[in-house]
Length: 427
Image (cartoon, rainbow, N blue to C red):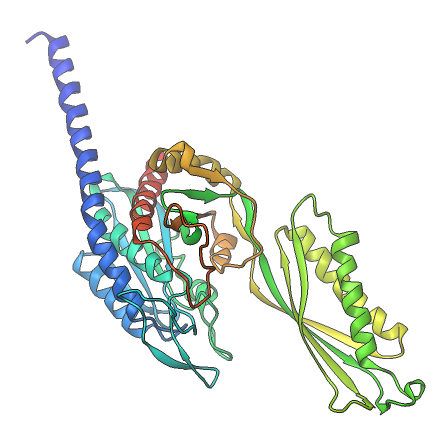
């Protein structure tokens, strides 16, 4: 045979085989949708609170094991990790889904509505997947099943991280991403990059939204303790009023945002959500306690704001004859999308969803503990549409009426699969 004809034939066979392989991958993605919906509805009917996701973890682990994926359980109490090695060696990419529900009593007419009851902080409450974590579990289980059938396309390793307690562990307990990292979830094999998604009730089905850099806020809880001097309310000059000092501190803290923070760079928020002081109308109390939150999207701004809050709290209290201390508790770091990784993976999002359906958005001051993974390895986190097209009044997350359209999940499955394949192929 003419060598040129032989070469042409080999190229034709190679391209045809590749195209058939790609078609098979897409067929498997399409076929998994019904099962993904069934999983989502199961988890929605059987929600479990943070660090108590025992049945959820058991079902996830059983599924991963059935696929021949190496499984680790009881990671960070109830977390599950699956490791899938491709036919070829290469880097390691991690995919994360959070698995916990919220102490919210569901208020809708879904056929798979949650009727689960539990106790949260000694209060009887319903339990509901009111933030979409049920869809995240189902999506990642679908991703695992499809990729397990296409190990020939994996040039490296995929690590599936099913993370408990994203909403925060119960008081006095460790949990969430921090504890998973502490227990070595990013090691053995060492993760090179991590991807995560969050379905959104106000984003139309078929749409993906993203932002390079700071995309969700660092969240700090702060407590200010003000020390005054108690006296009779009829003679305030004989004491030191901690309520007055508290008012001046609150006013001062807001000037940090309005007069010192470079808001053209990133947004920032200081909110005092609770004040406790006094027992009677005619007694100036001894102490006051202020509790609130700080939200920042830039590391330098965060450092400046916390430093100035400390200085201002102490100085204002002293100026009015009292004293005050402030303590900060870190709830999440900045969910920071690695700039190079975001740029690298943006074409994947556009190829999967269509360029017109991938939207660059502004940051949000909500928080997400996926941020702790991003502090250790480059990460990319994006938002997936879960709102029925045409809906003009979507219900917010963390509310009893929260709704997600099942039709939004297939795009999540396809996107996470393609992000994994494209990242590993490029690296």
